[in-house]
Image 1 (cartoon, rainbow, N blue to C red):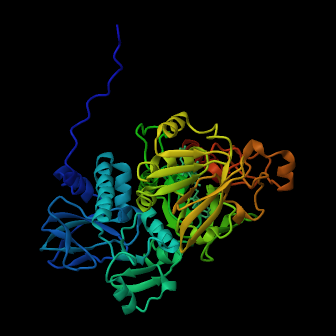
Image 2: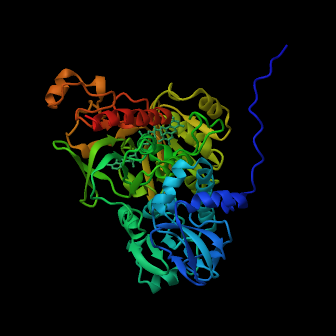
Image 3: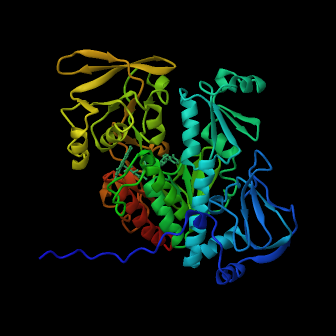
Length: 560
Ligand SMILES: Cc1cc2nc3c(=O)[nH]c(=O)nc-3n(C[C@H](O)[C@H](O)[C@H](O)COP(=O)(O)OP(=O)(O)OC[C@H]3O[C@@H](n4cnc5c(N)ncnc54)[C@H](O)[C@@H]3O)c2cc1C
C-alpha cells in the first residue's frame, strides 16, 4: 500500500494582477489607514508630489481621482486612481525621490499619510502590509518594464563604463532607457547637440539635459538622490558595511528587532549572489531564484522594517580606538555607530594576463546574468573556472550561446561542485571542457576579439575568435580598507570569536574581561559575517545565517 504525502491546503485563487497592482481598500481597511494619516481636500490640478522630489507622503483617494504622470512627457498619465486606491511605489519604502508626478485630476478628498507613519502601519497591520508591499513592489516592476523613468543612458554595449553604469542602475532597481551609439540612428545628432566626445561616454541624461559624463557610481547616486533621505550625522545603533546576503540578513533582523540600522553599500544590494543567474540550493526556493530577485526581496524587507540603505559609496576606514565607532565613507563623511557589522564579502579573482583591464566589461565579465547572456546570444563563450559559480554560468549561458568552452586549470570540475551541476554540464551538448588548460592571451581593438589558451600537458597554444570570457575563479576578501584595524588570517579574512587565540587578543589589546562573542572580531562591538569571515562556508544560506545570528550579540553589546 502506498501512503500519500500530506498535501498543503489548496491555495486561494490568485487575484488578477491589475487588482494587486492597484488594489481598492475596503471601508474597514480605509478606516485603519485613516487612523495613521489626516483627511484633507484637494483641488483639481493640485500637485501632491513632484517627480524627482522625495517621496514623503502616500495618498489614499477618498473622493475624486488622482493621476500619476510620466515626468518626461508631462501629459502622459501612467495611472489614474479612484476612491479606495493609494499612491506610491518602491520609493515609499526606500525614501528615494519619486519617479512620477502625483496630481489631483478632480476636486476631491484624500487621506495623507507621512512615510514614517505608513511604515509603522505596514509593520503592525499584517493584512494592510501584504496589500501595500505587494502593490509597491509590483508597481516598480511595472515602471521598469514600461521604461517610466527620467534617466537615459547614452553609451555603447562595447564600452566597459556603459556596462558598469547600467549594472549600477539595474541592480539598484532604477528604470532607465539605453540609447546605443552603435545601433540607434540619430544618436550622433544628440551627441553633437550636447557637445559630447568619445571620452564622455557613457552619458546620463535626465529630462533631456546632460547631467553626467562618464560618472562614478557615487555621482549617479548623488544626482538621482538615492541617499538624500539619509541623515549621516546621528549615532546609529548599528551600521552594516556591505549589502550582500549576510549584510541584508543582518539589516532585516536588526531593524525588525527595533535597532536603528544603516547599511552602507559601495555598489548595489546583492553582492556576489546578485551576480548569480540562479541560486538553486537556498532553502524555500525549489525551482531556484535569480540572485538579483533575492536581493530585491531582502532589500524591500529590510526597508519595510525601517533599515536605511546608502548605495554607491563604500567604507574607506574604520576608526577602532573610540566609542562610538566611526566609519569613514567614500565622500569623506563619517558615520557613527554603537556597533558595526562588517559584511563586505569577497571580490572576484582576476586573471593574471597583460591588458586584462582593457577588456573588463568589453568582453571579460565577472557575472553571468540575463544582461550578459543577451550580449553573447548565438556566440561562442569561454568560462574560466571549475567551481560552483563556473558550473552555474556554463549551464545558464549554454541556453543562449552557441558553444560554451570551460577552461579548467586542474584535472576536472572541482570536488566542491554540486552533483546536479556536474551532471548537467556532462550531459549538455553545447558545453566543452578543456582540462589542464589556462588562458594565456586576450586580444582585440576596443572589445575582446580573440582568446588564446594553452594545454599545459602538451604545451600547445590555440587562439580562437571568441568575444566573451567569463571569469569565475573564486574570490579574495574585501578587507583592504580595514588597514590593520582587525585581526585577519593569512589570506586576509577576518578572524572572529573562538578563532582568535589569546595571543592574538593580547596583541589587539582586547580590553574586556569577557571573550569575544561568536562572530565578534578582535574589537568589541565590531562583528564580521558571511564570506569576509575566516572559516565561513561561502554559501548564501550560511551568509544569511551568520548575518541573522550576529544581531543577538549586537543586542548584548548595546546593553553592556
Ligand atoms: C556567480 C556566483 C554564483 C553563486 N551561486 C551560489 C549558489 O548558487 N548558492 C550558494 O549558496 N552560493 C552561491 N554563491 C556564493 C554566494 O553568493 C556568497 O557566498 C554570498 O553572496 C556571500 O554573501 P556575503 O554577504 O557574505 O558577501 P558578498 O555577497 O560578497 O557581498 C558583499 C557586499 O559588500 C560590498 N562591499 C565590499 N566592500 C565594501 C566597502 N568597503 N564598503 C561598502 N560595501 C562594500 C560589496 O559591494 C557586496 O555587495 C555564488 C557566488 C557567485 C560569485
